[in-house]
Image (cartoon, rainbow, N blue to C red; front, side, top):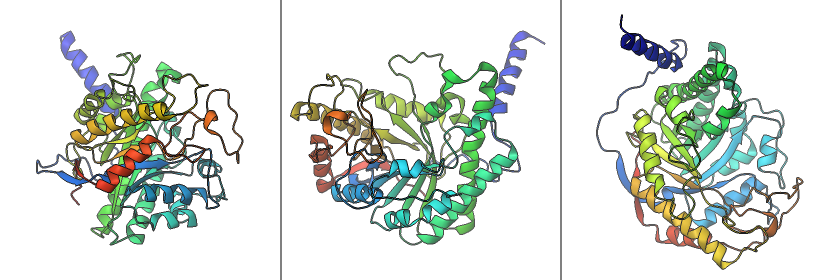
Length: 410
């Protein structure tokens, strides 16, 4: 038996062991989609969305989840992204603190969807809700995902999906359930080499169990005039400045062994002037690694998070002004250009109110931060002024020209 043959057998064994093929969990194996056309044109308000999560200031007496959602609706988009986690008793309270008292005993994502806070939001006239849906925390799967844990995840996502399909039937709403930045959750630098296989295998099985729950509920309910889809997100895709090619990346190590409806890139390596064009290569690379989706076709990759802080390249003591705002707007406009020319199903800007304070600035829950304390990931500054990017978005949504995108086939 020659060395090449032995090496081939070894590689096959290693990669086969990463896949989630347990018959107890996988009821609907991946399928190769037909080559019929998924690409369509849609108004940009149905493709370009805005996130609301963890803002450090507010302006009204409304509960904070509703304040942000109302502001995003006023902007003109039909796509909103929100945090949706039962990972800790304080998780939702931290994300939407002001004028809010979130339950501390939420035991499932279905229960979270049934809170008055989310029922109020889901009845708003958005067409698409992208939910950062975390069932426990971002990385408990690192310790492995035996069958009982896979089945628990599958059941939770089945219950949530069935609830959404039943409750919002015939509304034509879309609910996209996604994870948080896979590479950051994996945190490869903190994993001992001996545990790497377990962590990658755990992430793969966790992702597929989530998808299985969604699949099972959709199959059971049939076509009911509402869509629930599952999405798997990553946040490092080469080329990225300073990223070694030897780094273990989720796009290479996990994505090919999954079969999600959608895949998402959280992109912060394309925000600086001259780097925006890299977005096209990143989207192409993910599409080459991601299995085709029966729901969204071969270009089933969305831009789940993109943006630019207003102080990039600026001394932290320099105030926000027309020049800093224009630098931000140009970066955002360029990223939108490349993403829509590629044809992403969705792209979502981070975010409506800034959630990050500058280095050395302390934040206490309930504080209303000031402009000079924030990094500037926003459309509305802490002093209530609109950024040039807000005005740019407002114009886009008023004109509402069509852009290339992917239409799900239900």
